[in-house]
Image (cartoon, rainbow, N blue to C red):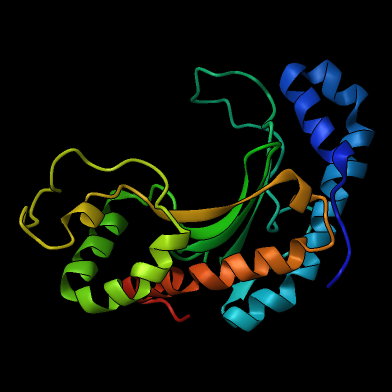
Amino acid sequence: MSRSYFTPATLRFLRQLKRNNNRAWFHEHKAQYEEHLREPFLTLIADLQEPVTRISAHYRADPSKVGGSLFRIHRDVRFSHNKLPYKTWSGARFFHERRREVHAPAFYLHIEPGNSFAGGGMWHPESKVLRSIRTFIVDNPGAWTRATGTAFRKRFDFHGERLKRPPRGFDPEHALIEDLKLKSFATGVSLDDELICSHGLVAAVANSFKQVAPLVDYLCAALDLEF
């Protein structure tokens, strides 16, 4: 697919929203949000359906306006000290067909001026799921090393925090202890602003998803999900 989706106006809108994160400004500029961000992102998601399906028949790119791959622009401020109403980025998750049954790994695309990226994995899995993943790594270290070995780590770094100490119940001397300390198993590769606005975006995102697929596949196996 060779076409562009986003333009400098997309990134300009997000920068302006960051400076004017209030309901009055957003409602005044909602047409710009729809034209430059939401609608092109939904089109991009639809165009990513085929590449995502080629990676795994069990994953979905859902361009539905509500409940699909695209995250809402509105922040959930109910339990947050930060009461700003809007996200100053836009993101989409490409999810497993069983996502409503279990907490499953996903592919992810993040659009933010100067901080866009594409990748996948699991961000902050609940404690039970996290322990299952760690136990699976201990029981299947060879497959983990193949999935996240030298080639993978030349391209990707894991996002998020690590425990300062080994997780309870795991051998502090285990060869993979630094990976067992991870609180999230998520990663991505940066996409610069020029690429975000270029005809090469679909190919770049699809390639990033393909590169991170061994991690997603491994996490699916850890959680007894098909990939």
